[in-house]
Every structure is written in structure tokens, then in C-alpha cells.
Image (cartoon, rainbow, N blue to C red; front, side, top):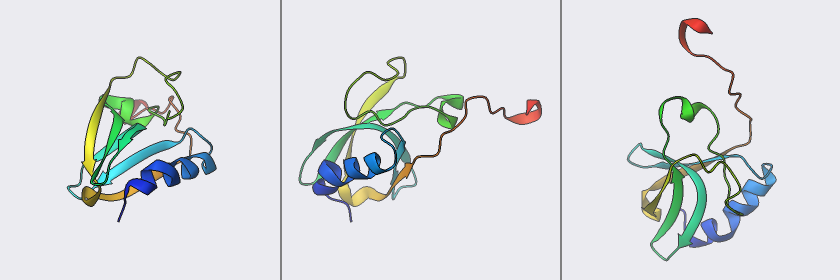
Length: 108
């Protein structure tokens, strides 16, 4: 089970080990997922995450972790989500770069 200490310290260590700017995704027991930009606040029962609002093909590339500051892509929409630790199934950290030139459908 995840807790405040994971989001306060361990996640930052795992992100750093993955190269500093990976894709971080929180998968919930409900089946939904959240692409995380940063951890805003931790409490005993829940974590407040700044998450990307993904539209269309934005889910295929970009939306990388940016905990240290706001110097990243400011054009992307974000919102805050308070997530109970008990609702979290897993946290994925993907360091593999995703290319923006990938086409879907018949044009690929």
C-alpha cells in the first residue's frame, strides 16, 4: 500500500533514477489513471497531485514529470486531484522517450 512517505521521498528518488523527467502515471483501483506533473501536498490519508489534462494525441507524448519547478511546457492544461492512498493500485514510471512523429491509422 502507498503512503505519504512514498510520495514525499521515494517517488522523487525513483524519478531521479529514471533520468529526472520520465512519464509518471498513477493507476487507480477504479481503472482510471492520472498522468502526474508533480506532487503538491501529502497528508496522512491522501495525496494532492498536479495532473495533466490529456486530450487526443497528447496521451501519446509529452506530459512529463516536473516536480522541481514550472519551467516545463506551460501550454498544457493541468488540474489538481486529491487521491486517497487506498485508491492507488500502482505508480508507473516510464523513462522510455515517446516520439512525437508517430502517426496512427492509415498514414503510418
